[in-house]
Length: 463
Ligand SMILES: Cc1cc2nc3c(=O)[nH]c(=O)nc-3n(C[C@H](O)[C@H](O)[C@H](O)COP(=O)(O)OP(=O)(O)OC[C@H]3O[C@@H](n4cnc5c(N)ncnc54)[C@H](O)[C@@H]3O)c2cc1C
Image (cartoon, rainbow, N blue to C red; front, top):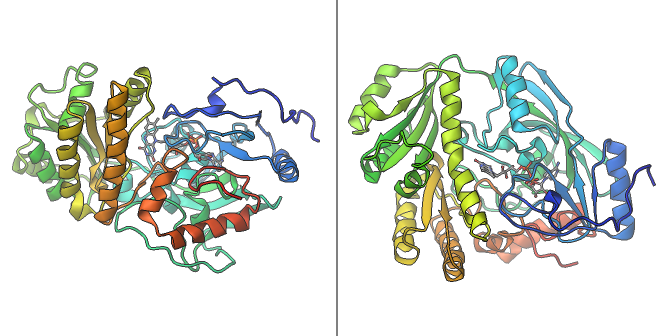
């Protein structure tokens, strides 16, 4: 055994951050490993394989579905894999590099990393594993599109480096994909797919991401950013329909009436009459006259909307947008519950229909105890429920399932960006047939015959 290889029976306290994630889900583990080299990772894999011990890979812990939360066995945290090199058009980043570190390092060279999950403490490894996306994915797509190469430790005891264009070397069926602009539920199997596309979004069930080469884009010279307020929710939704196809738009985010109310005390400068807001970013170049005309046409509250004139303003807007999930997550955890939020997306033409369905059911079943905000440009808003009692929590749980069924009925996905982890693994069956799930499980078993990696994530564990 390597020096410092801890005994598998090392106790991990039940309140250890290694056995929890940001959704409030908790688990347990026999040992936590923090390997410092590829050789150490392989040593852990070999021992786990020999003794048939489950391994759960941990990133930064900002996940919302329990994927990184072990239910026994060993936790392997890649926190020491923090090498970061920036070159023109690309970054080479260890799994532990945070999005904040990547963003700042890229910016110093006049570049930026386009996938933009608002949680900048998330790690490169975690965002690849969940195929994360965010506000700017409206224009730039999810993480998968920006991965040029991946270095992965596999359960056969090998380390492989896959580059874009390297194809999976065994037969794969084609799994139907939802008609949404983004989805990260299960493996998007297709004949001739790249290895990178298989590992991205596989939620730590197929291999351990050690390092990645990521595409960087030139930082924009000019951006128009704004938080645009509206007197009525309907006006904001009309503006979404009108603006979605504007070619220079790269962010279109929604804050519904209930969500605005939730953060008014933190942001007293929100206009009191405002009922909804859209966060927008457009460029490069910026046509300010065209935007001024669009705001008038949309009957927006132009006089007391917020406009960015500097990168500091833009950072303020990012924090404003990020305050929503932060407040929501803190509120549910304080009340003794876990996060109860949707991550469903529907085809963009079904956006209003889905929103209408959410609101009708929420007003009937959980009035005053929910907020809606998120990536409306991709028809992907998050409904978050804020139950205050056990009966309300039971209602919220039932609604989450009802909403998932409705999203699928409209051609949507049960996970657009967070993945399914353990908490939402049951939703996979709503989207895919038993044959499709079996095909995914066959791939899992091929790469991990003893089903050691990410046990309980995505699929029921049954060896
Ligand atoms: C306030 C808030 C806002 C958020 N906003 C967004 C958003 O806008 N968009 C979005 O997509 N997500 C968002 N998230 C969710 C979260 O940030 C993402 O899911 C992120 O990708 C998780 O990264 P992490 O490093 O924290 O991973 P963890 O939570 O540690 O793990 C997540 C999953 O990745 C696996 N994993 C981690 N590292 C590796 C690795 N090296 N190799 C293989 N598997 C690995 C784990 O096993 C687990 O299944 C938000 C979360 C919070 C708390």
